Image 1 (cartoon, helix red, strand yellow):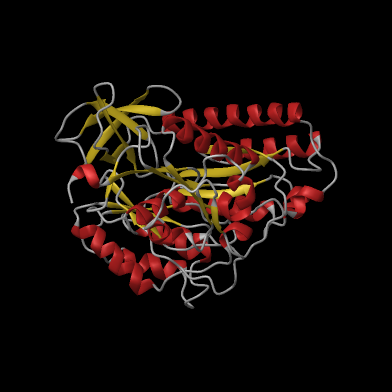
Image 2: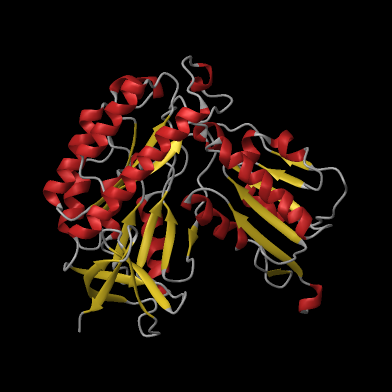
Length: 435
């Protein structure tokens, strides 16, 4: 079939790295003899939009993206998938121009739903109730072939009072270690050197197979050809000494940790339904620094949660200031229908939430700048990207410092030893290449 007869299809993803990994797997289900993949910024016959619903702002971005593509290519077939589609299918279907809405369990079958996909003027919805029997669908993404993203776990059993993820994705589940080792070997065969392990709650790995996340790490580091594994977010109560010690002893496991805190007061942590107290979080951070002094450590923080008084906020702020964290991901609480937090009293005004958020973001910038200064004249290994931007090539150290160097095609996709020279701003550093 020639290119004129192939339908142009574009994919657009909102939300977390897991969503991007899953979009890559979904795009691979469309046969090349029938579909021509094009950038979402161009006109297409079909747009596949994989959505997020973690915050009210995420929902808004999803609706804006849908409307943008409808305006961009009037008459295009619009399919909306994923978490927002699972939670609010009727809301999405009510947007004029939407043709297909698929929830969490159905999104991987989008190619089948589109076999006879013609606009009818009436949206088709397949967003069924999730059940304990929902399966695990393998997903991996090679991105720009600098690194790959490997989905190792999906869903969550935690039921935090503010979170819609269990409602949108179902309970915690995972494939066996042996399957993931095989997928890592497949990635290695393509010449990719780094794998980012993704999931909703990856520290909970093993729920459906009777294994552990530590066991998975021990087996993955045996895969020949993969030189670096970056671990995404791990809950503090699941970040065991064994995992930290594995990272300290094996150079393939990068010295970069992201640990959700959410609040620095036990009172708010209890209202959130979190499974730890702040002392446990502090203990995990200090254990990492004891074992890996130059590790990068990030944390998630939610501000403006119902019942968070000025005193509570200041307690969280002081707690964060005193911990050797590298950066913060700051979220402003927004009410999510269907969650327990939506019915809590003590709501905070938008103005106050914005003020507190700005204070935490400023603290994050300061902490990251301080971390960069600590790394001046340190030796590191950097995996360089394959993109040229403004005459520069960039990459990341193991402890998650972004670096820049003048463009050199010999660096692209390579892991090179460097010396960190100076902080260019509070986000990145310059380097000298070690010969």
